[in-house]
Image (cartoon, rainbow, N blue to C red; front, top):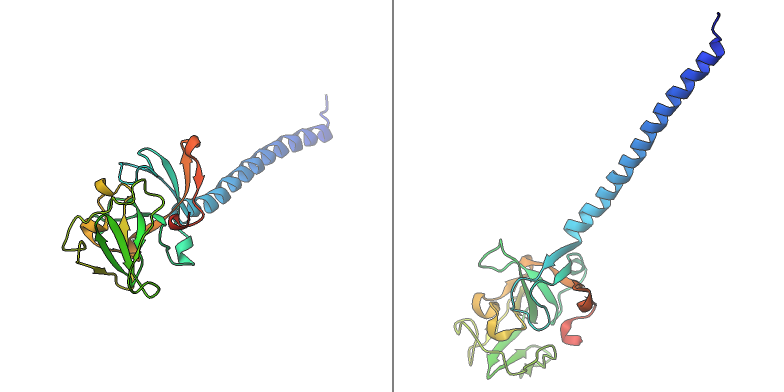
Length: 210
């Protein structure tokens, strides 16, 4: 019996079309993945980065095990502010990450005496005792390494230096131990406390202003 060439041709076209549709679907799926990677990966590594708090140096404001999202972009557009909480690489070990708060800004003088931090700058040439509302105890700030700062020894920060301290003043390794921090050692500022959900918070203003 003679075969119908039209039917054969039609069958062939249906089969080829199905393969093409399958390949097209796979290509569309791959494009979505590629585009997502091109967007998400740079954001993950160059804009926002997750960190988990390890240790008690920032208690009671940041507890061990809390999940934070760090903003690595903002400081390219404005200078860090007093009260900002940062993730940083400490000068003595660039492989580690610490979380600390900015206390002294570039060009200022810092004095730690009698449980208080005093800042000297152009606005307060005679000194301003910081009212650190985020601390449960306003008289808990004492020097560690007196060769850096402490008592009558006043530290003068250079144009690219910041004085960092942990909120848990009695149990924090910070600028009182290893000196000022430079801007190159700043990773980013804390933007969100994501977990636990009961402690969720967006940090949109400097801590000193809260």
